[in-house]
Image (tube, rainbow, N blue to C red; front, side):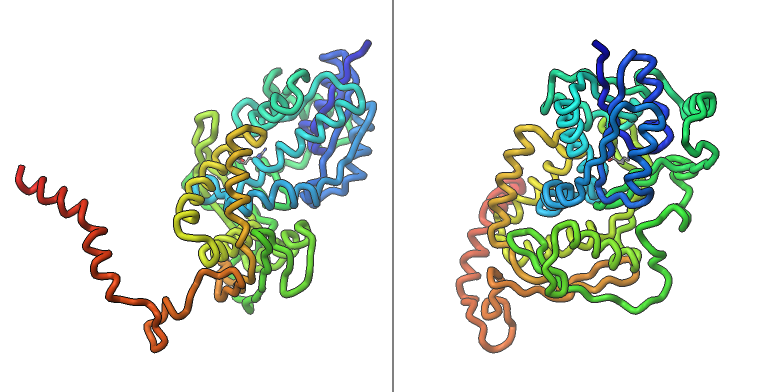
Length: 398
Ligand code: ARG
């Protein structure tokens, strides 16, 4: 019986060429699976049709926008997930969800092999294959761009040689990955890390240096989940989508960094993630107001580890799951409103309000009404400094 390959299909040049290539090389039937993660751009019907025109036997489009928002972006928000303190993990979050849908397509259509278009130099191959290993260890993997050492030129030649229905002339110098949580831009002139990104690199964000009127937004959270904008109840997808537009209009969320990839390379990455950055900024501040000090301090380390695990492709791993449980517990009081101003490339918190607040005006105030007993501080400070004092005395003697 002919084997069936389930291909993660983006509609771009590489995965389009992969359809006839895999069919021939593996003597197999190809099932194309395109997952809508709110990436915008080309409509999904055109992508579905292209897969058939390239020779797929089945072409599936999965609308996973709300699932991506609720089950992948929001957990990242609750973890304030920023790899190396800056990258909101938009690509890293999408792969485990794509894997999930590849696995269900393999079940539905009798696939035994899974295929993706990643090269051997990136993180995404790891995320696909570590995810598959956890969810469906019986499936084989083939990655044509990596395993058969493809180049872009070869792919174009192949497409033209076979008259595949794809635009091969358009010479986009960048490798781009985008979804609801943001957009990643790499390669081209950005590979010289002294070169600054030009405005045409960006599409989710406007130039923050252009003068405009600021926008003010109130974000309401319930247990770490954003549920309302300016009082309007919205789904997770709608919250992120609206903040992408509003924060993006003020150039919020641009990141230009050199990043440590899992495969050991340092790479130049430009990101724009207006909604993600605005939401993480707001969520962090609401945690500052509602999470007890020691839990908050501990959680910062957990958040960082969570981000590294997800970056490294270990979404479906025991440690990630255990950290999720701690993070969920830590969200139980993260409810309330954050008011922020979107302006000049920044989302700035200007107000907080919460029934679960630990901020106590009468303890914090320097005005009349002070309920803090300052006489208690004197002895506390002496005991608190005692270990250092004893150690310093010992050091002075030697
Ligand atoms: N460096 C980022 C990451 O590893 C972005 C990857 C973008 N992927 C792509 N195929 N362009 O998460």
